Length: 297
Image (cartoon, rainbow, N blue to C red; front, side, top):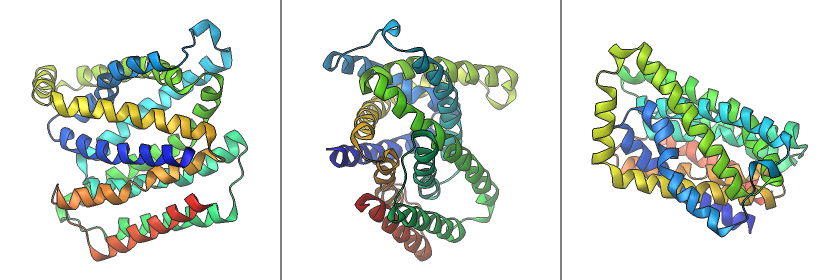
């Protein structure tokens, strides 16, 4: 069951990432950092009617202390990811995000005490090698070199924080359930990210002229793609959470989801008309080999 749920999560992730990339061309990354989760809230609330719901007083204090850390780190994750997606091609960012597989496996060891197998470690090593090849051989116009370097740093920040908070969420999931956890994490994360975004806009008005007006226009114009992102976001997370509860190693779920890099890059090539070199295809092949080995392990 956990493998099937991971495949479902991977599929939802691939189509959502593509929609998000198109939206970042019309909506600021600062807005997308909270908007994708905010637009998903009606779907998240609807999911509560299909599973038991835990009131705040029914959850232990450790749940809320971990939730505080989780919300802050996930907010950092959201901002860094959407900023990277805004300034770089999805076919460049997506392979780099595969590194979250490695950080999740090592995070599972230190946070949850889940020991990876030799096959798992070899698979993680192949992913690192594949990402290195993709990063070194990506076709880059000279004017994009600096922005891609910044995107790399932003993704590495995501990899670092996700290796920790993606595993502490397993502890909270065991204390509640996927729907309850998704609800509380969302209603706490959205206001925090929105407040930080508003502060950035207020202190840097020259960089965001008519921000709220442009945002209102962008949301109105692209409401259907946003609703699609919200729906796929909800299904993706609920499937991921349930898979993590039943899988032998939480990091293996991340490994399977990372296989979305292949359809994402294919969409980048055939739909978004992005350029991919032969060596980058080779790097993607190495990444998929590592993911396959992790899945079999």
